[in-house]
Length: 94
Image (cartoon, rainbow, N blue to C red):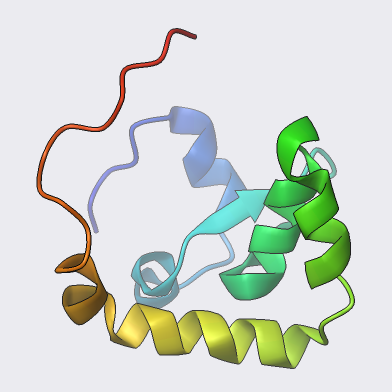
């Protein structure tokens, strides 16, 4: 298994198998809960002011549909990646 950059990540992800670690990203809540796939995207969007409106819209979509949509996009990452330019993104300051 590849080491995670943040030592705390290891404790948050202890319940996942190695395959699960690399299947999807995970969002860890302050309470230790983990969500990923499309459902996690909604939770992530809820945390940022500029994307809360999109989160409210997506929250109305049932979780199984969000998750299967995420998996569909994930299966076609290579093809979809060709649509994105291969140059550095915009620089932003923290």
